[in-house]
Image 1 (cartoon, rainbow, N blue to C red):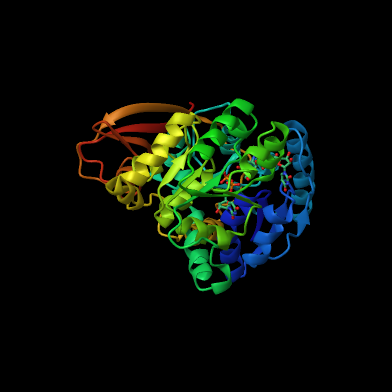
Image 2 (spheres, rainbow, N blue to C red):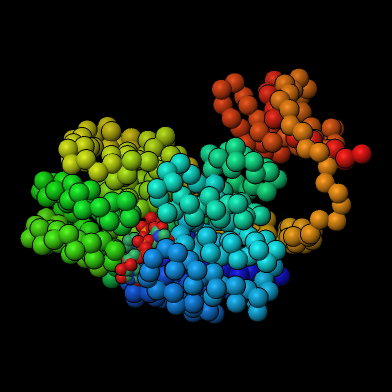
Length: 439
Ligand code: UD1
Ligand code: UDP
């Protein structure tokens, strides 16, 4: 078996790294394809070095550009590599343009796509990432979802539960492992003075930093928060826009704001673990904050990580200046709230997502189920119906007893449940799908 990994940006390198390690440890043949979307040392190479990843076998070198052109160049480059490497499965991670390009290429070549972190939805189609997630999930064969919430999103889009695997998020694997390594390295200790109240900030989302008004609101709120030390590793997109909108100087002049280049993963994990709170519009950092027990304020109006908000570790504040300032102050003042946010349970698993994903891939491959076959029989009529189950049966027992019926979605009172094989159906309403041959 050969696995192709597609990566292109900082978060993909970080979240794929535990999977690449797992595949290497098991001696599985693989090929690493970097699209080159992120190319600065700080956004790409430094993670290969510190996470001890091998040099990618291919780098498409797409660089920066408009969405259409950038995605088209990636599609062209990835297709060429996939045609020559003929992997058995292509793995993509998250929601960047690389994910869209990789999934589209593989699906059209009838190579199964495994989407790591599938099923996330903000339900905001103005985000390029939402389009990428949805399009990639149309092309996906194996959905490796972090939570049941993500699984349920997919069920309502018609995805078969048989193709959905709730694994947790590989960010927990990466975060746990690397924070441990970082804490042991005295050279990496963050340069925070004792007694300083540190807020770590990251900002790069197009809907924030490409809009001068929104960006200015955020910047003004930072300038007001003078009683904090704000450590701000600045994403290249944000530097460019701060310069263009004439906002960079304002920040540089503020002594409590420490603007730095994007830092390495180990140093970043240490920094947030020692911060009072994190303020961000990043997807991955919302997940890491709840994993490391740091309160998170998210500078967005929606999130595809609602689990973090429901768990109590994350608050959405949008980009309103007053709202940002008052939320920060409230969390700092209210010790109980601060502690409750720190104690929020992590919804993203126990750090074994990569092992689970590789187990699933190996298991399917050993059963010959990783192949996409062109149809060889006439399709049947698919009917769906809602049924209340009276019998004391789990999903797998039910499907064994009533052959040909698939439990698609389970409703338990007002709650929707993912049909795990061991879920007991007694007293629950299920959406059943049946395929009957056309006669
Ligand atoms: C991309 C992803 C986003 C992800 C983010 C992670 C898409 C549509 N967006 O956003 O989902 O959250 O990566 O950080 O895929 N630039 C550099 N050096 C680099 C890379 C970028 O200077 O190494 C600058 C360029 O001016 C470029 C801009 O940053 O135009 C934006 O880069 P791009 O890759 O298009 O999007 P990101 O904002 O990084
Ligand atoms: N990160 C890092 N150094 C930094 C800022 C972020 O290593 O200076 C890591 C962070 O820990 C997380 C990832 O980068 O794992 C998040 O990437 P980003 O915010 O760019 O993308 P998103 O997750 O929003 O797609």
